[in-house]
Length: 256
Image 1 (cartoon, rainbow, N blue to C red):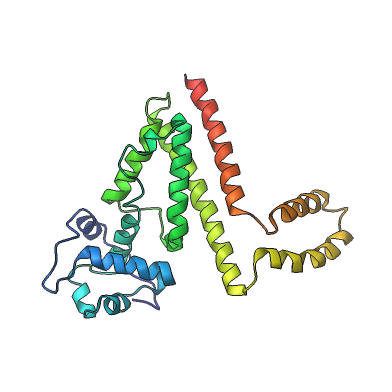
Image 2 (image 1 turned 30 degrees about the vertical axis):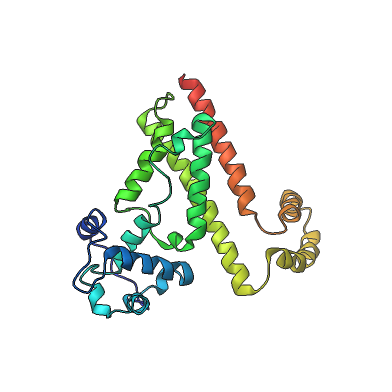
């Protein structure tokens, strides 16, 4: 299953697995929950691409073929993994709505929780999200994240669009942070070290064309000196989220 592109999940089989029992053991004593847990551990350590039924079986100390009686393939397994890591996102469905600060405080809380999950499980960025198979945890997540927006004057479509805007910002910023961390690891050089090495060379070339790119030179230098890197994911997260919430506040005020 590793070394080549996995077959896509069968939605019907994924839904049956997602909404079925994960704790019922088979003849070998295995459960879907145990298989998914081992797969998530492997993905956290090595990335999604490296996860295979063989490695999961080795971790669980069972035969590889015994896994297939529970999970038919990596596509369905990925759907189960994706749903699983969001299972403990919130204590209950109303936790976001209980946060201080009204809907704005709730969205800030939602953003932090999603950021934490994406940071703990960077392999989530490898999972296509265009057609997620809706499992129980993802469905509960959606319900919990919509509740703080209900009754503040937005239409249903505006509620969905506001939440999508926040989550898309978190996803994009977390992905950039994951790529930054991977680059640091592969190069053996921190962003600050890279900047200190690159900056003098870049300045030498930029000085010769400063009259052509005055804004690029000035703003790029200011940002690089501030972040000691191309970007600071934490700064980008906070800055963008604040602008999104400010815009949402204007929309809510207009509606009410």
